Length: 464
Image (cartoon, rainbow, N blue to C red; front, side, top):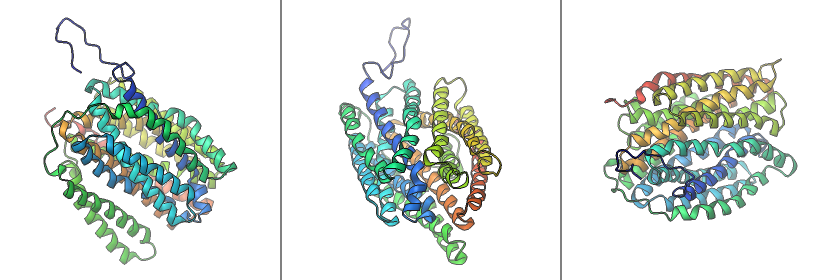
């Protein structure tokens, strides 16, 4: 949609719930709400799952398996979306996501559960990339910040009731029914979204250049995913077999370097100004925030004696803060890089403030205000990063760059959670050891948040 030709006619940006975009907006928000229910629920019940399947040593890896699989699927979906449109990758992703939920609910051992998490990741990857491309193709540029703000707002209801519902179900029916119970929600969400999936939106030039070659990009995605897994395996084994583990870590880093150099915009690994840094910032934020977020329920339940539902309240408040930050960024009262810098500072502060929640003599409820601060920073920065990256991308590279954003996001979260899990394994799983491990993890993730604060100025394009 373009502005009116008459110079004296005021231009009012279209409303995302207006007649032209209502169906697309409702469909997108329904799917995001469904994904939010899953994300909040799984984070809360993971301590119970790990104990029931006798897999506490795989606590971090169970999250990493999801993210690494998503990373691979993101790239394939980005290529698919640039060449064929977003509808088919979205539908394929949703089917895989549901299959993974069913496998997780039926898991009888840790191996099957890890496989289920990987299948969920293979489904979530295409779904997320397709949604971003859908937003870029369907909505005008000046409307997109409102859409991303609405996406964050779609987390509010699941965040308010998701942890409590998941905790209640896990305590009274068993954690398996948390996975099974989400599956029926897919049907109404899909039916609502079908009209928007049929909407013509692919009047764009075919993607060209090295980042549009299917075989090369698939090889690069495979190298990145395998390299991540090998690196995390090496980190896990550093304590027991340091020399062999160093070899695994070097091999993993080499594969990561090869893959990322081809998956990300040129100059991303050296934080080149503009789009390269914008893409990399997504990974730094994901690592800092989710590297702590995943361990909050474990710390509060095992150190402070919280129930599963009580531990989920901290995650709830973080998501509410996220929504508030996203809404504020949509007002666009300050430059994008300043919003990102403010977000990084809030995430870093929230991580440091959550450490006392596991200190003896201090109530674990201090995690609630701390995670509101961290969530606010994520909402402020992540939505800004998404909008800025789309603005910096040519139309025929929106799918590739949306995939690149998700690649750094998933990789950052996967590596942070994997490293956190390895540290927990080394330090131990008694209540006092979990408290020490949680504090160490928070310290490492705060350093990443601090790095994001200093690097945020490089988001600005060189010509700006």
